Length: 126
Image (cartoon, rainbow, N blue to C red; front, side, top):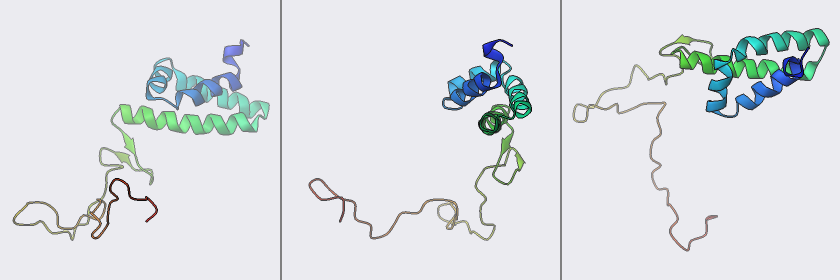
């Protein structure tokens, strides 16, 4: 077995690939997911628990990235589809007749009233 085919080497490559979108795309384009899956199976066979753990984490991240590239998004609940991962809006929220915007949207940020933002020369711990 060549050094480049050793499970630990492939998992190291995959782990590095998950740190950068460009690297992840390059890894996917070179059949990286299949190579990584074989490497994880090899690490299981070898009893290398650390390589198995790191390989499975990288495999999960790369598969999610691959799905996103294909337009299939998976959310935390395992829902796959074009709406997965998008904020769910409250069906009881009412539209303002004047603005056409939701008056209440639970998944959106709201400005904090009374929050004083520090100016120049003011301590940040106030």
